[in-house]
Amino acid sequence: MKVTIKIQQTPLFMRLKTILKNIFPVLLILSLILAFWFSLSIIFSTSQPILAVTSESMKPTLNVGDLIVVKGVSIGEVLKDFNNGVEDIIVFYAYTPNNLKNPTVIVHRVVGVVWVDGKPYLKTKGDNNPIADPWLGTPGLPEENLVGKVVAVIPMVGWLILFFKSLYGVFIISLCLAFYIFTLIFRARKAKRIGLME
Image 1: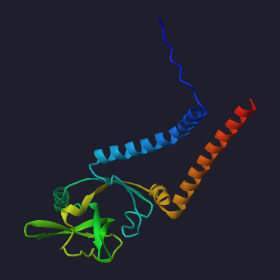
Image 2: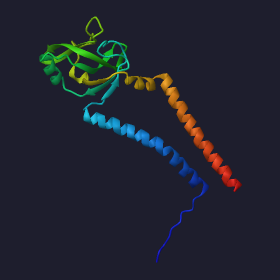
Image 3: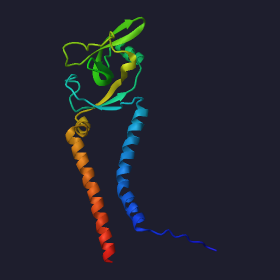
Image 4: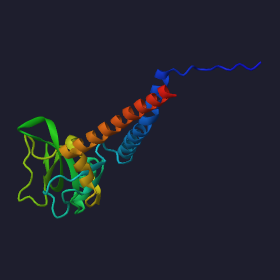
């Protein structure tokens, strides 16, 4: 004996079904972006695998709007490169006297090493800066502030990230979302009117 169960599709059920159907593409895109970022974080062993250059301190090596790929490394790897004559471009967190709680992400070159009580501290400098970076309370960059080193550069692509982080970018995204939601509401009301007419 075959038993068939029918679910009564009320107007509310149909409306929710339509809404979920329309927002699914947005949720899918967001999920793919998060999955892509999470995968990069695992592959490159850092929480900041991709960054956009925001200042001219590393010109002409790096320009504003360049996209950099960052690989998580230990300070030992950076020291090994430095001892072999390679001055890595590294990414690190820096604190300022006016901002002791939220560090700034800096992209500069390793130009020296200072040893204090058997612990190495990196001296850093922007290629376009006249002097090395000043450090607050330490002789240089401590290992715990090191994010990673730059392993690849894609010119100009970072402008896309900078745009979406800007006030204009947030405004454009908000406008697009508002338009999309308005379209969903309009379609739902139109479908409801057609249903009543029938």
